[in-house]
Image 1: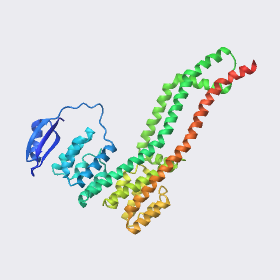
Image 2 (image 1 turned 120 degrees about the vertical axis):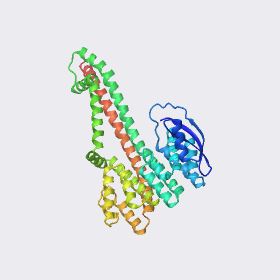
Image 3 (image 1 turned 135 degrees about the vertical axis):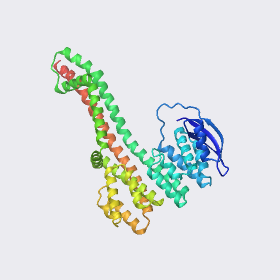
Image 4 (image 1 turned 90 degrees about the horizontal axis):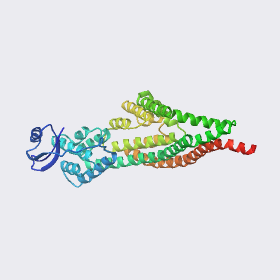
Length: 397
């Protein structure tokens, strides 16, 4: 629908600006008259052309949260903060969302209810913490905690990406080099060996056949590769598929330990932040489970919820789950006994953030020589296979 830029006075006499969607200018005028005492200015917004759907990143959300926290702490009214941020945010798509949230708040919604209308940007964790901050009158503190939480989550994701980037780059380079040799170099040797009319060694014959298959059937091979990836993705989207694959990921030789540490860090950080913000433990565990990112961890947390509802502590069900190390279970037990569970959970998260750093460095240092050896053996085998007939010919001479 078309957008209209407006300036209007609230019933308290405060002048406010914003953007509203409506089919016509008259409809926009009617909507605004219900929300404000007086509409000062109303005009159609200039049309913007977007190539592709604008994306709102976690970085945009964390900047918004941090700036919003500072403004609320400085004593600015909530609506005024939203108005400033909607116009000053660099991401125009996000600025539009903030403007819609501002309109909802002006229309009588609570801030948390206005955020819930945009689940693609603000998840359950975010909105529940905001609601707890509104009820407890500590919105600035909650916003600060949310900003810290999102920043640490982004840092954790960055570590994982850095761990995966290096091996992927090496494997892509290896594939390009091998493909180049098979397509452009090997055929030259093949024609030369055919002119010789001599029998070639088995290794050379294997590489020649591989080159022939690659040249003639490369489109089929690529198609099969994409099909396999597509089928794996579809399988992962099923309940059993995700459960089986997440269990497999945790059992991988080197990466499994890293995945476990990331899962524990995310679980403790999320739950600790929610509990510190005043969210009830059952609701906090439910949100943590749904944002866990691993089906094994998710099922384990839902198991904890069932035990707590029966009157048990968190420690007993946690100790039965292999994904949570004994040290984590012991520290949570101490946190429950001392009444400082949120603090203990955040300490565990800090510890496992450092453990993830160490695991990423160890995995990178282990993968680097392995990938180099793999690349050397692959290219070396092709080179040796092509030169074997030449060496044999030299021996004959």
